[in-house]
Image (cartoon, rainbow, N blue to C red):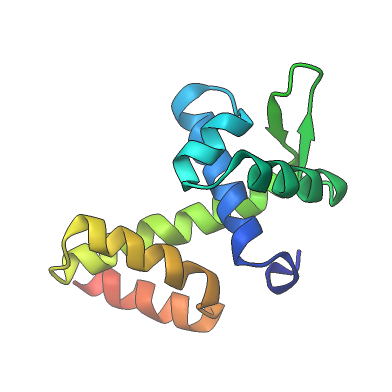
Length: 124
């Protein structure tokens, strides 16, 4: 999987899908739009693209399922999000700000820098 080719926006969609699956037990486009604060047409375009690339499947009732590859990417991004949020909170950053900052940083951080930050987090 080449995360750079996938892009931040698509990673956000996959992460949101995983979060919705964990929360609701299912994934619907309308819920993705609400969670991400985007329009339904934007979700439709993303769903189409992610489906074409094999990251998700959509059934006859328009419920979305992450494929194994899509799930792997979503879990990786979500893990980064959660651990970065925790690190920022440990540094005294308010939760909402920590979560928002983590959402931006999770996509651009190299694996080397991420691992170094996790070593620091473990020492705090």
